[in-house]
Image (cartoon, rainbow, N blue to C red; front, side):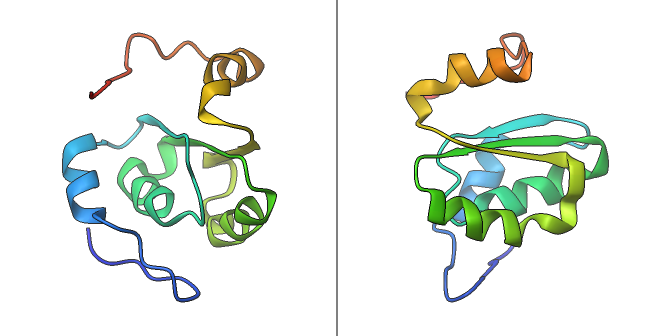
Length: 106
């Protein structure tokens, strides 16, 4: 855990998010508001080289920054432009069934 800063951007509540999500090596995680990739970077460190992060953001400029920031994780990252409301379509596009592993908080 820690405070990952990139180009002047520090992810908010990073440690708390990692504790709550409790990702493990090999997990597939979704970041449906990937933004500049701060939380995504920390989650990728948690899931390791056997895990996957699927990131979605509506802003193409954010995705460009996130893509650069996360490039060292190679094929463990899939970034797509869209809105979190597009999640069912994105999962179909990626041919993923994550229903058995989704955790939802209200």
